[in-house]
Image 1 (spheres, rainbow, N blue to C red):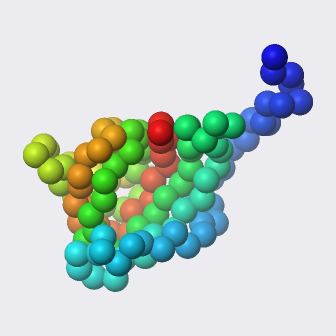
Image 2: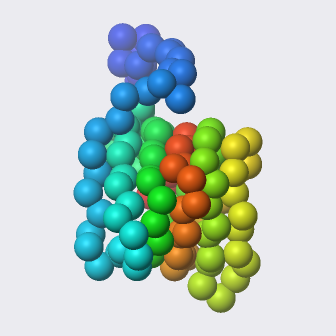
Length: 120
């Protein structure tokens, strides 16, 4: 049984001003440019299967294999090509859903910052 002492407090974060920490990319993910990734986990479930946070990437082109993710773009612009699927043009205010296992190529035009929820 969960008691009130075990539940984390409610909180808010102003996403544009949130301090982020370096999250180095695997050099094999970088297709072109010198993109830099930073982020901050805001909450993680006790079992580690749910993660919420903020993530940012500077301009460049990178590849990734996605988790089950919902995110909202706060600032910046990018094109996300989903292998065998659509090409998503994303910018401020856009919500995006990526499926676990999607192989993607991100072409980041302007430094992109997003708030995300990942289910592992």
